[in-house]
Image 1 (cartoon, one colour):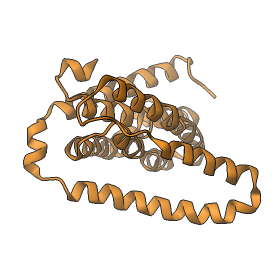
Image 2 (tube, one colour; image 1 turned 90 degrees about the vertical axis):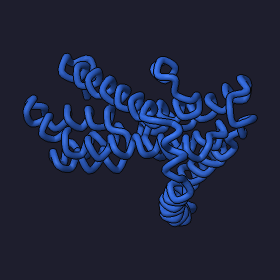
Image 3 (spheres, rainbow, N blue to C red; image 1 turned 90 degrees about the horizontal axis):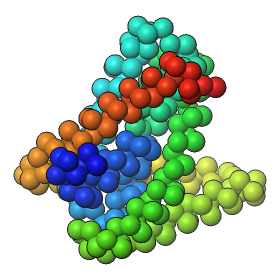
Length: 221
């Protein structure tokens, strides 16, 4: 709704929303091929969440101390309001070991929403005929589920799974780097500041709503 109000392109708006709601760059990288997002739309979504991640690293710990949040409360808040897992862990570690433990656990649970959201987003864009052509079916999500199930149910595969995960993290970094390297400044200028405004508004809403819920005791461990 915020994206429509700001006249943000459908695919860019979806990626910013998914990145804010789930886990930043990883969610954007997963959803982008499913909805056939253009390279500049993917890049502006990534830039938006990465800038807000950087801000959160500096802002969240002082705010938490000022408000007297316990380590458990701060861990919850970080996990619910900061985009990327790495930034969540980094902010929580500044606050304390217990905060980092809570933040990591809750954030990983939040990241599981990549699977259903990517499937639904791909199906919706395919039916609606959104810009960028027919959406690709996100078969990689089924591969992700199969790999996770195999490593979990067959302990003998876990060493191999760890090696694959190590390689996958580095390939994801390379993919994100190459996405950014292929974008020209003039391409981003055509999108204007509206996508960032959408991401900033969503971030403020997520941060304030989750903080209020934690302070009021509606969300607790």
